[in-house]
Image (cartoon, rainbow, N blue to C red):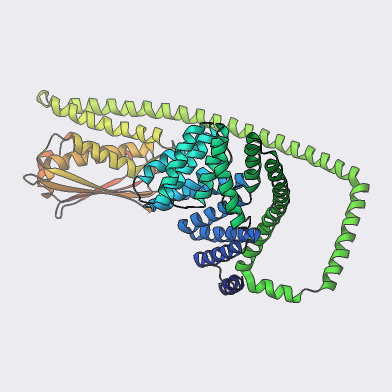
Length: 569
Protein backbone atom coordinates (compact mmCIF):
# COMPACT_ATOMS: atom_id res chain seq x y z
CA UNK A 1 0.00 0.00 0.00
CA UNK A 2 2.84 2.34 0.87
CA UNK A 3 4.38 1.99 -2.58
CA UNK A 4 1.10 2.99 -4.28
CA UNK A 5 0.72 6.04 -2.04
CA UNK A 6 4.32 7.11 -2.62
CA UNK A 7 3.82 6.65 -6.36
CA UNK A 8 0.73 8.89 -6.26
CA UNK A 9 2.54 11.62 -4.31
CA UNK A 10 5.35 11.66 -6.85
CA UNK A 11 2.84 11.71 -9.75
CA UNK A 12 0.85 14.64 -8.27
CA UNK A 13 4.11 16.54 -7.67
CA UNK A 14 5.09 15.97 -11.32
CA UNK A 15 1.69 17.21 -12.54
CA UNK A 16 2.03 20.44 -10.54
CA UNK A 17 5.27 21.23 -12.40
CA UNK A 18 3.48 21.44 -15.73
CA UNK A 19 2.38 25.03 -15.11
CA UNK A 20 1.56 25.95 -18.69
CA UNK A 21 -0.73 22.93 -19.11
CA UNK A 22 0.50 22.17 -22.63
CA UNK A 23 2.08 18.75 -21.93
CA UNK A 24 -1.29 17.04 -22.28
CA UNK A 25 0.01 13.55 -23.02
CA UNK A 26 2.43 13.52 -20.05
CA UNK A 27 -0.28 14.80 -17.70
CA UNK A 28 -2.65 12.13 -19.05
CA UNK A 29 -0.08 9.37 -18.38
CA UNK A 30 0.44 10.60 -14.81
CA UNK A 31 -3.30 10.70 -14.04
CA UNK A 32 -3.64 7.23 -15.60
CA UNK A 33 -0.89 5.94 -13.27
CA UNK A 34 -2.66 7.47 -10.26
CA UNK A 35 -5.96 5.88 -11.35
CA UNK A 36 -4.28 2.47 -11.70
CA UNK A 37 -2.77 2.80 -8.20
CA UNK A 38 -6.17 3.63 -6.67
CA UNK A 39 -7.70 0.70 -8.55
CA UNK A 40 -5.09 -1.61 -7.01
CA UNK A 41 -6.04 -0.19 -3.59
CA UNK A 42 -9.76 -0.98 -4.31
CA UNK A 43 -10.59 2.74 -4.15
CA UNK A 44 -12.87 2.62 -7.14
CA UNK A 45 -14.28 6.15 -6.93
CA UNK A 46 -10.79 7.70 -6.78
CA UNK A 47 -9.62 5.44 -9.60
CA UNK A 48 -12.57 6.54 -11.75
CA UNK A 49 -11.90 10.17 -10.93
CA UNK A 50 -8.30 10.02 -12.12
CA UNK A 51 -9.01 7.86 -15.17
CA UNK A 52 -11.58 10.47 -16.24
CA UNK A 53 -8.95 13.20 -15.78
CA UNK A 54 -6.47 11.16 -17.80
CA UNK A 55 -8.99 10.68 -20.63
CA UNK A 56 -9.60 14.46 -20.71
CA UNK A 57 -5.90 15.17 -21.30
CA UNK A 58 -5.45 12.27 -23.76
CA UNK A 59 -8.36 13.73 -25.70
CA UNK A 60 -6.67 17.15 -25.71
CA UNK A 61 -3.41 15.52 -26.85
CA UNK A 62 -5.27 13.50 -29.55
CA UNK A 63 -3.60 10.36 -28.16
CA UNK A 64 -5.94 7.56 -29.26
CA UNK A 65 -3.90 4.79 -27.63
CA UNK A 66 -4.01 6.53 -24.23
CA UNK A 67 -7.71 7.30 -24.63
CA UNK A 68 -8.51 3.69 -25.58
CA UNK A 69 -6.67 2.40 -22.51
CA UNK A 70 -8.47 4.86 -20.19
CA UNK A 71 -11.94 4.06 -21.53
CA UNK A 72 -11.31 0.34 -21.14
CA UNK A 73 -10.06 0.82 -17.54
CA UNK A 74 -13.15 2.91 -16.70
CA UNK A 75 -15.41 0.24 -18.25
CA UNK A 76 -13.66 -2.45 -16.17
CA UNK A 77 -14.27 -0.55 -12.89
CA UNK A 78 -17.94 0.09 -13.70
CA UNK A 79 -18.30 -3.62 -14.56
CA UNK A 80 -16.94 -4.61 -11.17
CA UNK A 81 -19.25 -2.07 -9.50
CA UNK A 82 -22.23 -3.66 -11.33
CA UNK A 83 -22.80 -0.39 -13.17
CA UNK A 84 -23.22 -2.38 -16.39
CA UNK A 85 -24.80 0.34 -18.57
CA UNK A 86 -21.90 2.71 -17.85
CA UNK A 87 -19.45 -0.14 -18.41
CA UNK A 88 -21.02 -0.89 -21.81
CA UNK A 89 -20.93 2.77 -22.89
CA UNK A 90 -17.21 3.11 -22.15
CA UNK A 91 -16.45 -0.28 -23.73
CA UNK A 92 -18.18 0.90 -26.92
CA UNK A 93 -16.09 4.10 -26.87
CA UNK A 94 -12.90 2.04 -26.55
CA UNK A 95 -13.88 -0.18 -29.52
CA UNK A 96 -14.82 2.87 -31.60
CA UNK A 97 -11.36 4.39 -31.03
CA UNK A 98 -9.71 1.02 -31.75
CA UNK A 99 -11.52 0.95 -35.12
CA UNK A 100 -9.98 4.34 -35.95
CA UNK A 101 -6.42 3.19 -35.16
CA UNK A 102 -4.60 1.76 -38.17
CA UNK A 103 -2.72 -1.52 -37.73
CA UNK A 104 -3.99 -2.11 -34.17
CA UNK A 105 -2.67 -5.28 -32.53
CA UNK A 106 -5.10 -8.16 -33.26
CA UNK A 107 -4.74 -9.68 -29.79
CA UNK A 108 -5.52 -6.36 -28.07
CA UNK A 109 -8.55 -5.83 -30.30
CA UNK A 110 -9.75 -9.38 -29.55
CA UNK A 111 -9.51 -8.70 -25.78
CA UNK A 112 -11.61 -5.54 -26.22
CA UNK A 113 -14.31 -7.52 -28.05
CA UNK A 114 -14.27 -10.31 -25.43
CA UNK A 115 -14.79 -7.79 -22.62
CA UNK A 116 -17.59 -6.03 -24.54
CA UNK A 117 -19.23 -9.43 -25.12
CA UNK A 118 -19.02 -10.25 -21.40
CA UNK A 119 -20.79 -6.99 -20.52
CA UNK A 120 -23.54 -7.61 -23.11
CA UNK A 121 -24.04 -11.13 -21.73
CA UNK A 122 -24.53 -9.71 -18.26
CA UNK A 123 -27.16 -7.35 -19.71
CA UNK A 124 -28.68 -10.32 -21.64
CA UNK A 125 -28.24 -8.62 -25.04
CA UNK A 126 -28.25 -11.65 -27.38
CA UNK A 127 -27.82 -9.87 -30.76
CA UNK A 128 -24.58 -7.94 -30.01
CA UNK A 129 -23.16 -11.01 -28.21
CA UNK A 130 -23.71 -13.20 -31.30
CA UNK A 131 -22.21 -10.55 -33.58
CA UNK A 132 -19.12 -10.15 -31.38
CA UNK A 133 -18.54 -13.90 -31.11
CA UNK A 134 -18.55 -14.23 -34.91
CA UNK A 135 -15.91 -11.48 -35.17
CA UNK A 136 -13.81 -13.02 -32.38
CA UNK A 137 -13.91 -16.43 -34.05
CA UNK A 138 -12.36 -14.90 -37.20
CA UNK A 139 -9.68 -13.04 -35.20
CA UNK A 140 -8.71 -16.15 -33.18
CA UNK A 141 -7.76 -17.90 -36.44
CA UNK A 142 -4.94 -15.32 -36.82
CA UNK A 143 -3.41 -15.63 -33.33
CA UNK A 144 -2.25 -18.48 -31.11
CA UNK A 145 -3.56 -17.79 -27.61
CA UNK A 146 -5.20 -20.63 -25.68
CA UNK A 147 -6.35 -18.34 -22.88
CA UNK A 148 -8.36 -16.13 -25.25
CA UNK A 149 -9.75 -19.19 -27.05
CA UNK A 150 -10.86 -20.75 -23.74
CA UNK A 151 -12.55 -17.49 -22.74
CA UNK A 152 -14.25 -17.38 -26.17
CA UNK A 153 -15.66 -20.91 -25.59
CA UNK A 154 -16.83 -19.86 -22.10
CA UNK A 155 -18.70 -16.82 -23.49
CA UNK A 156 -20.22 -19.07 -26.17
CA UNK A 157 -21.38 -21.41 -23.41
CA UNK A 158 -22.89 -18.43 -21.53
CA UNK A 159 -24.77 -17.40 -24.69
CA UNK A 160 -26.14 -20.93 -25.18
CA UNK A 161 -27.25 -20.99 -21.53
CA UNK A 162 -28.96 -17.63 -22.00
CA UNK A 163 -30.77 -19.07 -25.05
CA UNK A 164 -31.66 -22.19 -22.93
CA UNK A 165 -29.59 -24.49 -25.16
CA UNK A 166 -28.04 -26.27 -22.16
CA UNK A 167 -26.58 -29.28 -24.03
CA UNK A 168 -24.63 -26.99 -26.39
CA UNK A 169 -23.52 -24.92 -23.40
CA UNK A 170 -21.98 -28.08 -21.87
CA UNK A 171 -20.19 -28.85 -25.17
CA UNK A 172 -18.56 -25.37 -25.28
CA UNK A 173 -17.58 -25.65 -21.59
CA UNK A 174 -15.82 -28.96 -22.26
CA UNK A 175 -14.01 -27.41 -25.25
CA UNK A 176 -12.75 -24.69 -22.92
CA UNK A 177 -11.67 -27.23 -20.26
CA UNK A 178 -9.69 -29.19 -22.86
CA UNK A 179 -7.41 -26.17 -23.37
CA UNK A 180 -6.48 -26.35 -19.64
CA UNK A 181 -5.76 -22.60 -19.16
CA UNK A 182 -7.06 -20.13 -16.58
CA UNK A 183 -7.74 -16.76 -18.23
CA UNK A 184 -9.71 -14.25 -16.12
CA UNK A 185 -10.71 -17.03 -13.60
CA UNK A 186 -12.10 -18.97 -16.57
CA UNK A 187 -11.63 -22.39 -14.90
CA UNK A 188 -13.96 -21.54 -12.01
CA UNK A 189 -16.42 -19.87 -14.33
CA UNK A 190 -16.44 -22.95 -16.63
CA UNK A 191 -17.16 -25.21 -13.65
CA UNK A 192 -19.99 -22.91 -12.56
CA UNK A 193 -21.47 -22.90 -16.07
CA UNK A 194 -21.28 -26.70 -16.22
CA UNK A 195 -22.97 -26.97 -12.81
CA UNK A 196 -25.84 -24.69 -13.89
CA UNK A 197 -26.26 -26.42 -17.26
CA UNK A 198 -26.33 -29.94 -15.76
CA UNK A 199 -28.84 -28.73 -13.16
CA UNK A 200 -31.12 -27.38 -15.91
CA UNK A 201 -31.18 -30.75 -17.71
CA UNK A 202 -31.89 -32.51 -14.36
CA UNK A 203 -28.47 -34.17 -14.12
CA UNK A 204 -28.29 -33.03 -10.50
CA UNK A 205 -25.62 -35.52 -9.41
CA UNK A 206 -23.24 -34.29 -12.15
CA UNK A 207 -24.10 -30.72 -11.26
CA UNK A 208 -23.39 -31.38 -7.58
CA UNK A 209 -19.80 -32.42 -8.43
CA UNK A 210 -19.04 -29.02 -9.95
CA UNK A 211 -20.90 -27.10 -7.23
CA UNK A 212 -18.82 -28.84 -4.55
CA UNK A 213 -15.61 -28.14 -6.47
CA UNK A 214 -16.41 -24.44 -6.57
CA UNK A 215 -17.38 -24.46 -2.87
CA UNK A 216 -13.93 -25.87 -2.02
CA UNK A 217 -12.35 -23.14 -4.18
CA UNK A 218 -14.25 -20.47 -2.21
CA UNK A 219 -13.11 -21.98 1.11
CA UNK A 220 -9.53 -22.13 -0.17
CA UNK A 221 -9.61 -18.45 -1.19
CA UNK A 222 -11.35 -17.38 2.05
CA UNK A 223 -14.52 -16.41 0.10
CA UNK A 224 -12.64 -13.83 -1.99
CA UNK A 225 -13.72 -13.01 -5.56
CA UNK A 226 -12.94 -15.92 -7.92
CA UNK A 227 -14.71 -14.68 -11.04
CA UNK A 228 -18.33 -15.58 -10.23
CA UNK A 229 -21.31 -14.01 -8.44
CA UNK A 230 -20.95 -15.71 -5.03
CA UNK A 231 -24.53 -14.97 -3.89
CA UNK A 232 -25.97 -16.37 -7.14
CA UNK A 233 -23.70 -19.43 -6.78
CA UNK A 234 -25.07 -20.28 -3.29
CA UNK A 235 -28.64 -19.85 -4.52
CA UNK A 236 -28.11 -22.16 -7.55
CA UNK A 237 -26.23 -24.66 -5.38
CA UNK A 238 -29.08 -24.70 -2.84
CA UNK A 239 -31.63 -25.24 -5.62
CA UNK A 240 -29.63 -28.23 -6.90
CA UNK A 241 -29.32 -29.77 -3.40
CA UNK A 242 -33.06 -29.33 -2.88
CA UNK A 243 -33.68 -31.22 -6.15
CA UNK A 244 -31.49 -34.10 -4.82
CA UNK A 245 -33.43 -34.11 -1.53
CA UNK A 246 -30.55 -32.81 0.60
CA UNK A 247 -32.68 -30.21 2.38
CA UNK A 248 -30.27 -29.59 5.29
CA UNK A 249 -27.48 -28.69 2.87
CA UNK A 250 -29.92 -26.59 0.83
CA UNK A 251 -30.97 -24.71 3.98
CA UNK A 252 -27.33 -23.96 4.95
CA UNK A 253 -26.58 -22.76 1.43
CA UNK A 254 -29.62 -20.47 1.43
CA UNK A 255 -28.40 -18.93 4.70
CA UNK A 256 -25.06 -18.21 3.03
CA UNK A 257 -26.92 -16.81 0.03
CA UNK A 258 -28.89 -14.51 2.35
CA UNK A 259 -25.68 -13.26 4.04
CA UNK A 260 -23.97 -12.64 0.70
CA UNK A 261 -27.06 -10.95 -0.72
CA UNK A 262 -27.22 -8.65 2.30
CA UNK A 263 -23.54 -7.79 1.94
CA UNK A 264 -24.01 -7.33 -1.77
CA UNK A 265 -26.91 -4.89 -1.19
CA UNK A 266 -24.85 -2.92 1.31
CA UNK A 267 -21.88 -2.88 -1.05
CA UNK A 268 -24.04 -1.81 -3.97
CA UNK A 269 -25.45 1.07 -1.90
CA UNK A 270 -21.94 2.12 -0.96
CA UNK A 271 -20.87 1.80 -4.57
CA UNK A 272 -23.79 3.95 -5.73
CA UNK A 273 -22.86 6.62 -3.16
CA UNK A 274 -19.23 6.45 -4.27
CA UNK A 275 -20.34 6.65 -7.89
CA UNK A 276 -22.34 9.81 -7.22
CA UNK A 277 -19.45 11.28 -5.25
CA UNK A 278 -17.13 10.43 -8.09
CA UNK A 279 -19.33 12.15 -10.65
CA UNK A 280 -19.61 15.21 -8.43
CA UNK A 281 -15.86 15.28 -7.79
CA UNK A 282 -15.15 14.83 -11.51
CA UNK A 283 -17.25 17.85 -12.42
CA UNK A 284 -15.69 19.97 -9.73
CA UNK A 285 -12.15 18.81 -10.44
CA UNK A 286 -12.49 19.33 -14.17
CA UNK A 287 -13.39 22.97 -13.58
CA UNK A 288 -10.58 23.28 -11.07
CA UNK A 289 -8.00 21.73 -13.43
CA UNK A 290 -8.97 23.98 -16.34
CA UNK A 291 -8.79 27.12 -14.21
CA UNK A 292 -5.56 25.97 -12.62
CA UNK A 293 -3.74 25.51 -15.92
CA UNK A 294 -5.12 28.70 -17.44
CA UNK A 295 -3.86 31.01 -14.73
CA UNK A 296 -2.54 29.09 -11.72
CA UNK A 297 -0.31 31.81 -10.33
CA UNK A 298 -3.06 34.40 -10.50
CA UNK A 299 -5.43 32.12 -8.59
CA UNK A 300 -2.82 31.54 -5.85
CA UNK A 301 -2.32 35.29 -5.38
CA UNK A 302 -6.05 35.88 -5.22
CA UNK A 303 -6.48 33.12 -2.64
CA UNK A 304 -3.70 34.61 -0.48
CA UNK A 305 -5.39 38.02 -0.45
CA UNK A 306 -8.81 36.66 0.48
CA UNK A 307 -9.97 36.54 4.13
CA UNK A 308 -13.03 35.51 6.08
CA UNK A 309 -14.02 39.05 7.04
CA UNK A 310 -14.29 40.06 3.41
CA UNK A 311 -16.40 37.00 2.63
CA UNK A 312 -18.66 37.79 5.60
CA UNK A 313 -19.04 41.40 4.50
CA UNK A 314 -19.80 40.37 0.91
CA UNK A 315 -22.37 37.83 2.12
CA UNK A 316 -24.17 40.44 4.25
CA UNK A 317 -24.02 42.93 1.39
CA UNK A 318 -25.41 40.41 -1.10
CA UNK A 319 -28.18 39.47 1.33
CA UNK A 320 -29.10 43.14 1.76
CA UNK A 321 -29.10 43.70 -2.00
CA UNK A 322 -31.27 40.64 -2.58
CA UNK A 323 -33.68 41.76 0.15
CA UNK A 324 -33.87 45.22 -1.41
CA UNK A 325 -34.44 43.78 -4.87
CA UNK A 326 -37.17 41.54 -3.51
CA UNK A 327 -39.14 44.43 -2.01
CA UNK A 328 -38.40 46.63 -5.00
CA UNK A 329 -39.75 43.96 -7.32
CA UNK A 330 -42.78 43.38 -5.13
CA UNK A 331 -43.81 47.07 -5.01
CA UNK A 332 -42.73 48.03 -8.54
CA UNK A 333 -44.06 44.98 -10.35
CA UNK A 334 -47.02 46.80 -11.86
CA UNK A 335 -44.85 49.72 -12.98
CA UNK A 336 -42.35 47.40 -14.60
CA UNK A 337 -45.17 45.58 -16.37
CA UNK A 338 -46.51 48.86 -17.75
CA UNK A 339 -43.04 49.82 -18.90
CA UNK A 340 -42.70 46.50 -20.66
CA UNK A 341 -46.06 46.99 -22.41
CA UNK A 342 -45.00 50.48 -23.45
CA UNK A 343 -41.68 49.23 -24.76
CA UNK A 344 -43.38 46.44 -26.67
CA UNK A 345 -45.80 48.93 -28.22
CA UNK A 346 -42.92 51.18 -29.19
CA UNK A 347 -41.09 48.22 -30.68
CA UNK A 348 -44.16 47.27 -32.71
CA UNK A 349 -44.48 50.86 -33.97
CA UNK A 350 -40.81 50.90 -34.93
CA UNK A 351 -41.21 47.59 -36.78
CA UNK A 352 -44.30 48.91 -38.58
CA UNK A 353 -42.35 52.01 -39.59
CA UNK A 354 -39.48 49.81 -40.75
CA UNK A 355 -41.91 47.73 -42.82
CA UNK A 356 -43.41 50.88 -44.35
CA UNK A 357 -39.91 52.16 -45.22
CA UNK A 358 -39.03 48.77 -46.72
CA UNK A 359 -42.18 48.82 -48.85
CA UNK A 360 -41.36 52.36 -50.00
CA UNK A 361 -37.85 51.23 -50.96
CA UNK A 362 -39.27 48.23 -52.82
CA UNK A 363 -41.65 50.52 -54.75
CA UNK A 364 -38.72 52.81 -55.60
CA UNK A 365 -36.64 49.81 -56.74
CA UNK A 366 -39.56 48.64 -58.90
CA UNK A 367 -39.80 52.06 -60.55
CA UNK A 368 -36.03 52.09 -61.08
CA UNK A 369 -36.25 48.63 -62.64
CA UNK A 370 -38.99 49.82 -65.02
CA UNK A 371 -36.88 52.83 -66.04
CA UNK A 372 -33.85 50.59 -66.59
CA UNK A 373 -35.94 48.16 -68.64
CA UNK A 374 -37.13 51.03 -70.88
CA UNK A 375 -33.54 52.19 -71.19
CA UNK A 376 -32.43 48.68 -72.22
CA UNK A 377 -35.16 48.53 -74.88
CA UNK A 378 -34.02 51.94 -76.18
CA UNK A 379 -30.39 50.79 -76.25
CA UNK A 380 -31.24 47.57 -78.07
CA UNK A 381 -33.18 49.63 -80.68
CA UNK A 382 -30.23 51.98 -81.15
CA UNK A 383 -27.82 49.05 -81.43
CA UNK A 384 -29.98 47.36 -84.05
CA UNK A 385 -30.09 50.63 -86.01
CA UNK A 386 -26.29 50.75 -85.79
CA UNK A 387 -26.09 47.17 -87.13
CA UNK A 388 -28.38 48.15 -90.03
CA UNK A 389 -26.19 51.19 -90.81
CA UNK A 390 -23.03 49.04 -90.78
CA UNK A 391 -24.61 46.50 -93.13
CA UNK A 392 -25.80 49.23 -95.53
CA UNK A 393 -22.35 50.89 -95.57
CA UNK A 394 -20.57 47.56 -96.10
CA UNK A 395 -22.99 46.68 -98.88
CA UNK A 396 -22.39 49.99 -100.69
CA UNK A 397 -18.61 49.61 -100.44
CA UNK A 398 -18.34 45.89 -101.24
CA UNK A 399 -18.17 44.16 -104.61
CA UNK A 400 -20.20 41.10 -105.52
CA UNK A 401 -17.25 38.80 -105.19
CA UNK A 402 -16.63 40.02 -101.62
CA UNK A 403 -19.88 38.53 -100.31
CA UNK A 404 -18.10 35.93 -98.11
CA UNK A 405 -15.86 38.59 -96.55
CA UNK A 406 -18.91 40.84 -96.15
CA UNK A 407 -20.82 38.17 -94.24
CA UNK A 408 -17.81 37.28 -92.09
CA UNK A 409 -17.15 40.91 -91.12
CA UNK A 410 -20.84 41.55 -90.49
CA UNK A 411 -20.98 38.51 -88.17
CA UNK A 412 -17.93 39.77 -86.29
CA UNK A 413 -19.36 43.27 -85.84
CA UNK A 414 -22.77 41.98 -84.74
CA UNK A 415 -21.00 39.60 -82.34
CA UNK A 416 -19.15 42.58 -80.81
CA UNK A 417 -22.50 44.27 -80.10
CA UNK A 418 -24.08 41.02 -78.83
CA UNK A 419 -21.26 40.54 -76.33
CA UNK A 420 -22.18 43.91 -74.78
CA UNK A 421 -25.69 42.68 -73.97
CA UNK A 422 -24.40 39.33 -72.75
CA UNK A 423 -22.03 41.19 -70.42
CA UNK A 424 -24.88 43.37 -69.16
CA UNK A 425 -27.44 40.67 -68.40
CA UNK A 426 -24.80 38.55 -66.62
CA UNK A 427 -23.58 41.54 -64.56
CA UNK A 428 -25.22 42.74 -61.29
CA UNK A 429 -25.10 46.32 -62.64
CA UNK A 430 -26.94 46.95 -65.88
CA UNK A 431 -25.69 50.53 -66.43
CA UNK A 432 -21.98 49.88 -66.94
CA UNK A 433 -19.94 47.37 -68.96
CA UNK A 434 -16.89 45.63 -67.44
CA UNK A 435 -14.39 46.49 -70.23
CA UNK A 436 -11.72 43.96 -69.13
CA UNK A 437 -14.16 41.07 -69.31
CA UNK A 438 -15.85 42.37 -72.49
CA UNK A 439 -12.64 43.00 -74.53
CA UNK A 440 -11.13 39.66 -73.37
CA UNK A 441 -14.20 37.72 -74.56
CA UNK A 442 -14.31 39.76 -77.80
CA UNK A 443 -10.64 39.04 -78.62
CA UNK A 444 -11.08 35.35 -77.89
CA UNK A 445 -14.16 35.17 -80.16
CA UNK A 446 -12.51 37.03 -83.07
CA UNK A 447 -9.30 35.00 -82.92
CA UNK A 448 -11.15 31.65 -82.68
CA UNK A 449 -13.45 32.50 -85.62
CA UNK A 450 -10.61 33.80 -87.83
CA UNK A 451 -10.26 31.89 -91.08
CA UNK A 452 -6.46 32.33 -91.07
CA UNK A 453 -5.00 29.21 -89.42
CA UNK A 454 -1.32 29.67 -90.35
CA UNK A 455 -0.62 32.31 -87.70
CA UNK A 456 -1.56 31.96 -84.01
CA UNK A 457 -2.48 35.39 -82.60
CA UNK A 458 -2.27 36.01 -78.83
CA UNK A 459 -4.18 38.99 -77.40
CA UNK A 460 -3.05 40.61 -74.15
CA UNK A 461 -5.76 42.82 -72.58
CA UNK A 462 -5.17 45.27 -69.73
CA UNK A 463 -8.35 47.15 -68.75
CA UNK A 464 -8.74 46.39 -65.06
CA UNK A 465 -11.31 48.43 -63.12
CA UNK A 466 -12.56 50.18 -66.29
CA UNK A 467 -16.37 50.36 -66.52
CA UNK A 468 -18.00 52.32 -69.38
CA UNK A 469 -21.54 53.16 -70.44
CA UNK A 470 -22.96 50.94 -73.20
CA UNK A 471 -23.07 53.95 -75.59
CA UNK A 472 -19.25 54.16 -75.33
CA UNK A 473 -18.58 50.43 -74.97
CA UNK A 474 -20.19 49.48 -78.32
CA UNK A 475 -18.06 51.86 -80.46
CA UNK A 476 -14.95 50.80 -78.51
CA UNK A 477 -15.80 47.14 -79.20
CA UNK A 478 -16.32 47.80 -82.91
CA UNK A 479 -13.03 49.72 -83.15
CA UNK A 480 -11.13 46.88 -81.50
CA UNK A 481 -12.98 44.36 -83.72
CA UNK A 482 -11.76 46.14 -86.90
CA UNK A 483 -8.18 46.56 -85.65
CA UNK A 484 -7.80 42.94 -84.51
CA UNK A 485 -9.27 41.70 -87.82
CA UNK A 486 -6.65 43.75 -89.74
CA UNK A 487 -3.85 42.43 -87.51
CA UNK A 488 -4.93 38.82 -88.09
CA UNK A 489 -5.06 39.35 -91.87
CA UNK A 490 -2.02 41.53 -92.57
CA UNK A 491 0.34 42.13 -89.62
CA UNK A 492 2.04 38.73 -89.37
CA UNK A 493 2.59 37.19 -92.82
CA UNK A 494 4.77 34.09 -93.02
CA UNK A 495 5.25 33.75 -89.23
CA UNK A 496 3.78 31.15 -86.81
CA UNK A 497 2.79 33.43 -83.89
CA UNK A 498 1.82 37.03 -83.31
CA UNK A 499 0.97 39.31 -80.39
CA UNK A 500 -1.51 42.13 -80.08
CA UNK A 501 -1.78 44.20 -76.91
CA UNK A 502 -4.85 46.25 -75.90
CA UNK A 503 -4.59 48.74 -73.02
CA UNK A 504 -7.40 50.98 -71.74
CA UNK A 505 -6.81 53.26 -68.77
CA UNK A 506 -8.33 56.30 -67.12
CA UNK A 507 -6.14 59.35 -67.80
CA UNK A 508 -8.04 62.08 -65.99
CA UNK A 509 -11.56 62.00 -64.52
CA UNK A 510 -13.71 61.07 -67.57
CA UNK A 511 -10.85 60.99 -70.09
CA UNK A 512 -9.63 57.52 -71.21
CA UNK A 513 -6.80 56.31 -73.45
CA UNK A 514 -7.12 53.23 -75.71
CA UNK A 515 -3.84 51.86 -77.10
CA UNK A 516 -3.87 48.95 -79.60
CA UNK A 517 -0.39 47.69 -80.54
CA UNK A 518 0.87 44.93 -82.82
CA UNK A 519 4.48 43.92 -83.44
CA UNK A 520 4.15 42.92 -87.08
CA UNK A 521 5.45 44.37 -90.35
CA UNK A 522 4.14 47.87 -89.67
CA UNK A 523 2.13 50.23 -91.84
CA UNK A 524 3.20 48.64 -95.15
CA UNK A 525 0.24 46.34 -95.04
CA UNK A 526 -2.07 49.29 -94.57
CA UNK A 527 -1.44 51.13 -97.81
CA UNK A 528 -3.64 48.87 -99.84
CA UNK A 529 -6.32 49.09 -97.23
CA UNK A 530 -6.12 52.71 -96.10
CA UNK A 531 -9.29 53.60 -97.97
CA UNK A 532 -11.05 50.38 -96.99
CA UNK A 533 -14.40 50.39 -95.28
CA UNK A 534 -12.89 48.95 -92.06
CA UNK A 535 -10.48 51.85 -91.58
CA UNK A 536 -13.17 54.36 -92.51
CA UNK A 537 -15.41 52.77 -89.92
CA UNK A 538 -12.68 53.12 -87.26
CA UNK A 539 -12.36 56.84 -88.03
CA UNK A 540 -16.15 57.33 -87.90
CA UNK A 541 -16.42 55.47 -84.60
CA UNK A 542 -13.60 57.56 -83.06
CA UNK A 543 -15.50 60.69 -84.12
CA UNK A 544 -18.71 59.25 -82.68
CA UNK A 545 -17.17 59.00 -79.20
CA UNK A 546 -15.61 62.48 -79.58
CA UNK A 547 -12.08 61.11 -79.60
CA UNK A 548 -8.83 61.58 -81.47
CA UNK A 549 -6.78 58.94 -83.31
CA UNK A 550 -3.00 58.86 -83.88
CA UNK A 551 -0.67 56.20 -85.33
CA UNK A 552 2.90 55.27 -84.41
CA UNK A 553 4.75 53.10 -86.94
CA UNK A 554 7.77 51.76 -85.03
CA UNK A 555 8.50 48.04 -84.76
CA UNK A 556 4.91 47.36 -85.62
CA UNK A 557 1.89 49.62 -85.55
CA UNK A 558 0.30 51.40 -82.58
CA UNK A 559 -3.16 53.04 -82.57
CA UNK A 560 -3.53 55.69 -79.83
CA UNK A 561 -7.11 56.86 -79.19
CA UNK A 562 -8.01 59.51 -76.57
CA UNK A 563 -11.70 59.96 -75.74
CA UNK A 564 -13.96 61.52 -73.10
CA UNK A 565 -16.65 59.17 -71.74
CA UNK A 566 -19.03 62.14 -71.24
CA UNK A 567 -18.38 63.76 -74.66
CA UNK A 568 -19.95 61.58 -77.33
CA UNK A 569 -22.66 61.86 -79.93
